Length: 324
Image (cartoon, rainbow, N blue to C red; front, side, top):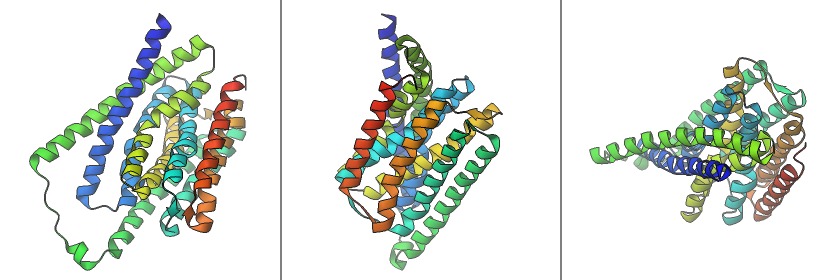
């Protein structure tokens, strides 16, 4: 009976995160749209920040409560799920050409952050100096997006640049501000429920918090990205989907992980299991996703299929060898 109650509240937490994330993303996207920011920049910054909120809050809450394995597992597991599951779906359904100029900087930053964390993992910790270097990657990411926005706006035709956007109605502004606040509240409540019930489930079932973190919690907190991707597929907006995923992954690695270390005020210990399985898996799916695309300037269906196979294999290994 107790297990059923905990499981119920665990899924309630996921529902709060998904619905809250949905409202939050809608409101954030509306703000970006009325401001005239290019779609790729919307995907890689505002929507990414919005959809990364669940991972950030879950990891920060877990870290502040001393649940380090869940904190790291969720952040790294979310990146692996974003690429191996969600980006894979996007590429399978929407393969196509890309502008290397737009994607290369973000790909390099994502892989650099992943390599830094893998290096830290093999040393057994995300140290404070490493956290500061990762925050530097985050700062570069923000500046690069600002420059990309300026370049994109400069490329617009003079007529389009001079076009006057209609001011949104007061009712529309109020509605989106309420959505923004309600979405944030839903994510916060859902994140707390996921941390508390996830830890309790791990204890009852007899698996480590890391297993719960890199599988159920990671996928649960990545559901907003999945919702965004499915919406992008329906609307045939591949740049929004992939831009969102790349941006979210950079934030997961260069913002969430170092924040956890900086808030705790001491190095963030990385377990042997995370260093041996989770971090390399994150690096492998990242390489499969971005390296061929940067060479050929295209995402191809075989990449999506391979990513899905690797992700399924990773989950199988993680769930089978729980003693790692």
